[in-house]
Length: 272
Image 1 (cartoon, rainbow, N blue to C red):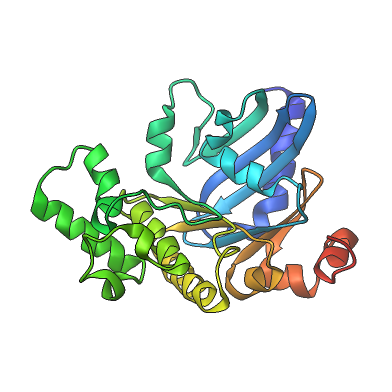
Image 2 (cartoon, one colour):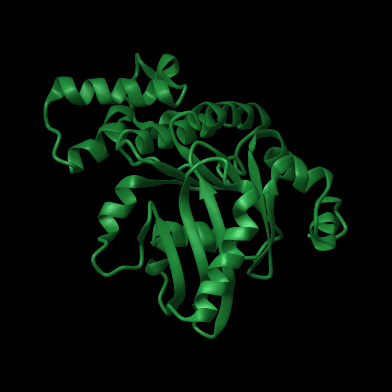
C-alpha cells in the first residue's frame, strides 16, 4: 500500500473513531460515482454500523438516493454509471468481480419510496423471495409468511385475507407488506429510500415504530427528506450536500450542535 493510501486510511479511521461503538457493516472508502460526465458522489468516506438506524439527509439532488442504491449495486441498472473507490460490506468489497449481485441483494434488502407490492396475493408477495431461493414446502412457507408479516407489524390486519390481492391494502399497509417481503429473505441490512414520503401521518408513525423495532435484528439505512423523522428515530445522521458527506455524527449532535455551518444552515431551514 502506498504511503498516501495509508495516510488516507488513518484519517478515515480517526474521523470515524468516535462512532465505532459497534461493528461496521459498511465501510465506504473514497467512493466516487459519475452519471456520464456528472460527478454525483465525491470522495465518500462513511462507516455504517450494525443494529442502528442511520439517517441520510440533505436537499434534493445531493446524492442521498444514489448512495444507498450503490450499497446494493442497484445503481448499476442506470446506463453510463461508473465508480471508483471501495464499499466494504462485512469486510468484502462489493465491487469485486467475484461478488455476485444476487448474493449481495439477498443480504441487503431494499424498501422504496412508493409501496411496490407485486400484483399477487398478500401471501404470494411474502412467499416470493423464499420460493426464488428454493423453498417449496408449504408448512415452511406458511411459517415464513406469518413470521415476516408479524415482523412487519401487519399480521393481525391481514391474517384473514392472505389470498386477497395486495393492491386492496391501504398505502401504509402496502409499505409494511413490502417490508415483510424484505424480511422473508432474512437480510442483514435493510435500505429504505424515503419509505414514508407517500404515506399519511398515521401510517408514517406505524412505519417509524416498526423501523425502531427492526433495528434490534437488522441494520437500517434510511434516506429521508423529513428532518423531524431523522431526529426522532435515527441513531446517527449523515448530511449530504452536492454529492459530498458534510458531516456524520450521532443524531443528537447533528441536530443540537453540528460541527459544520452548512449542516446548521440546512437543519435550521436556511436552505434546502
